[in-house]
Image 1 (cartoon, helix red, strand yellow):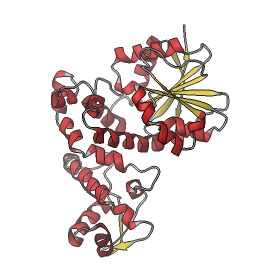
Image 2 (cartoon, one colour):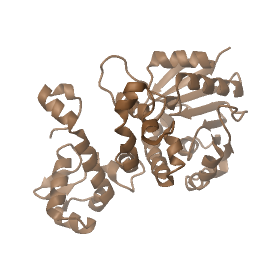
Image 3 (cartoon, rainbow, N blue to C red):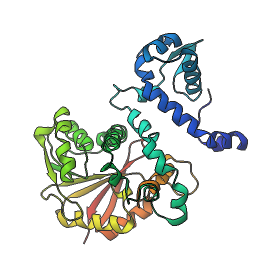
Image 4 (tube, helix red, strand yellow):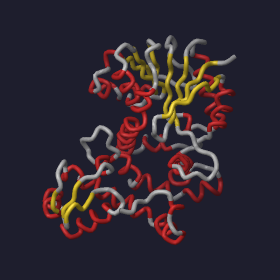
Length: 344
C-alpha cells in the first residue's frame, strides 16, 4: 500500500504529482465525512452495495471513492468490492471521541477555501488572507458574521484538543497544584480533560464573556461543571488571580510578536511569583525537516497575524514577556507543553 508521506522518499516526478494533486485527497475525505461512510461501515467489513444503500449513494461511484481512499490508508478493500475501516478511518467516525471529522469538513468548507486561495496575496504583502477575502483582520471576526462556521470551528477544535492535549495531560504531573486557570479556553475542552484526569483540582475557564456563557452545557456534559468556575474577561487586560497553574493553548500562535509579548506581560502581572504557566503550542522544527507544523504555519498566515515559532523564538518571546522556559513536554503529537516560570 502506498501512502502520502514525506515527498522526498519518492521520485521527483511522483512526489510533485502527488503534491500538486493533494487537494483531491482532501475533497475525497470530505465527501466520505459528509456522507457518514465510516459510521455506516461500523465495526465490520461491508460490501459496496450495503454501504451505498445505507448512505444513499450510487454504488459504482462510491466504489471509486472507497478504492481511492483505500490507496492512501483510509479504508481497506479486504475482498473485492468489500471494505473495512482502518485505524485512520476511525478519525472519520462521528461517535469517536477523538474524531477529526469536523476539522476535515472545516478545511473543505467554502468559507475556509475562500481565504485559503488568497494565500498568494498574503505572501506578497504580509496581510492575513482573511483581510483580502473578507476585509477583516482575523478569522474570529468572520465567525461574528457566520455562526454556523463558528460552531464548526469549535467542534473542530474539540477534536484537535482531544487528540493533541489528552496525551500531554497524561504526561504532565498536576499533583502539586490545587487550582488551574485555562486562559482563552473556549468551549472548555482542555480544562475538562485536566479536571477529569485530576479529581483533586479546582478549575477556572477564562475567555470572552460570550464564550464562557456558551461553555456551560459542555462542562456539564463532561461532568466537571461543579469544579470549574467560568469567568469572562479580556486576558490582554487582566486574568483571574489566586491559581498556582495557568494554561494557555494555541493562542500564542495566533498572535504577532508584539501582541504575544503584551499577552504574556498581562499574564505575568496577574500571576503569583510561585505560580507556573503551561503554554501548549506547536514548535516549528528548524531546517528543511518535513513537518506538519510548517503547513499549519501557512494556515495561520491565512487567518491572522501570528505564526508557528521555533524553540529559540519561543524562548526570546517568553523572556520579553517576563517568563523563563524551564521544560518542554512532548507526547508524540504535533504540540508540546512548555512549562514557564515568572522572572523579574
